[in-house]
Image (cartoon, rainbow, N blue to C red):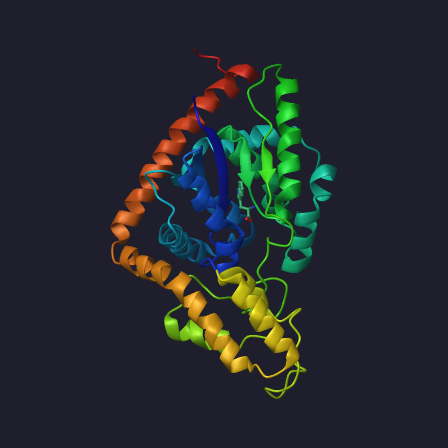
Length: 338
Ligand code: TRP
């Protein structure tokens, strides 16, 4: 039996951080290694252009950084098809056809896009490509007939939009070319790792992230500067655990949860200092991140091999996409010459 296809991806607009790792990369590797799926992992450079059209150098550099991050965490090109969005011409074509099946009003109501538009403050007006990127994302998912799309909660509207487009297309051309995909979302409360400053979101623009590529000194510095509990001034003062980033991270990175429980009790009672606590966090994080960092450095010495991996993956993905596009053209009746 054919394995179920799952597809997900990232915009190449910077290196990936441990928020990406905890929120999605780790799960992707587990899904890959379960052997139950046929994973497609896409570097969404076309989508990155929707808000970085005048910054191609950033996209070009980030593409290889993201590829290195993928390989470093254990995504394996023998098991996962890792590919580059712009190298699949059928995606642009399918996006054009989907564009006619959605109204501007519908696109303007997408809550994630609305928030992004506010955050980005597009000076010269909203690029048409940005407003319509959920349509292009629907093409990404459907061209591979992906059934499962593991993504963050902010991507819910994109999945909904995709499902609508699948129904509209199949209905307009009276052929069940596409299947409705399902989003796979992180378990409640586990989706997002806060930044080291305590902000709910880790992001490059907030400068509060820890990157998979950070060297040991950088990691140590970042852990030392982590937000804890501003009312916990002297070691013997009782401290707070909620909202304390060090404990949020320990909940995730320390595999010995009864030890974490003990530390929490000590901290709340007073007598456990931030420096000691942070040293412990650094140890458990280093244990998890060091092998990733080392693999990343190894791959980085062999960029030709990394690019060859992306090229192979893109060719394989393109073959699959072309098969679907044949069905699309036939369903639409534009297969005039064969
Ligand atoms: N929009 C996604 C993000 O910003 C990236 C993405 C592009 C994607 N195309 C996709 C995710 C298709 C899942 C499926 O993270």
